[in-house]
Length: 107
Image 1 (tube, helix red, strand yellow):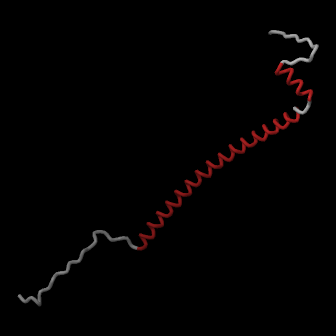
Image 2 (cartoon, rainbow, N blue to C red; image 1 turned 180 degrees about the vertical axis):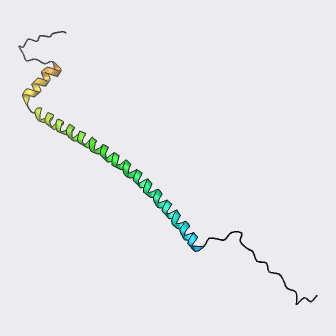
């Protein structure tokens, strides 16, 4: 045997399955991107619906508070009238003018 003439065998390693080609890789990335964007859209739609409901509830509450404020303003104006104050004093406190006779009827 001549050491110079010996050949070493080079073995090639074959892949069991072909690797990802550029079109397959691009399609996979595209699919992942579409799935991600779809998920974001679904989440945003849910948040939009929730916020829309909250805004509607706040509008109703605002209308109720505005109506209450109007009633309070009217009450404040009535309280500047001395006859109205006298009516309240008679009704809620049971006050009477000097010399008046009070009749109480029991049911």
